Length: 401
Image 1 (tube, rainbow, N blue to C red):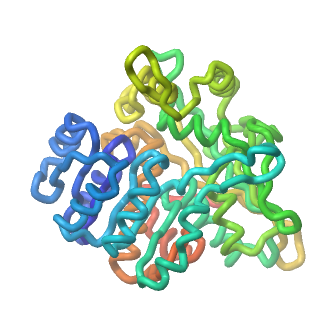
Image 2 (cartoon, rainbow, N blue to C red; image 1 turned 90 degrees about the vertical axis):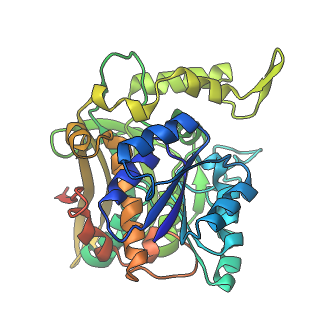
């Protein structure tokens, strides 16, 4: 398999490192806007022929298509912030190769009732083009990171193998990670974090369909496994809520994230000051997006691994009935930052996201997952995916609640 990797940030590097040990990965073309970053990652990988580097502007669809054709790739892997999804997605369609991402095309709030009704939903752009992909006989596998991705696989597995009837699927994410030496240092893309945390969260119910609520709504405590413990989680906009109901028979889907009071306070302040704005504004003689300035002021999550300590947990809580009796389970994956640094020289949050994409490549390459059109992880056999997780160094757990 030959892959064009669009974006070589923290997750992109982790993808390449995990793929390096897989002999069926013939070539991964590393691309990024930052030339020095490309050289850094290629030097770490130590194989310029198998991991060639190319500068790219991911907003330019024609440049993505040109590189895909130059290297005759089988798959275009989108490892950029989701603001670039449209040109990358459309480039894969025009070239006629498989597309994969870890976050879907962006939403736009309802202009009249943003905290009650959906506007443009996450992934709407992609699913509106599903028929075209089907007719062309190619696959866009969307939302295959950890959340969305692994969490969706867990939802499908639970509904298929652990329950007779599913009442609610609730993705729950929390950690006890600390970053030493910084008062505030997000361990994932702050651009994406601002987007998903300040947009109106989406909830799905069988009787109502998709609807929205206010940011940081419906706080509750969730008891995370392996010593992380009880953390307050709140509603956040996330792709699982848009994906799971399409393939999993259930009555309700939610996504809640343990952000912590400090993080929520920072996000509220950024919004109050307009610094979450992703549209360029004029500053003297320069056009710049305030959100890009915020990202540039903060440390790069890809280089925080040696300062991070603790565990991060991603998983799916499912409530329903089995054999006529109530049941609740939490399917999860816990990644230890120190272990990820020792094994991959990548911090745990990006590594935990990246391995899922490579398992997806593996299943597609070996014909175990097949399909055409625009599909989420729930559309495929979850057992085939979960059987590979331990082999990739990220075993899952199941906790009865």
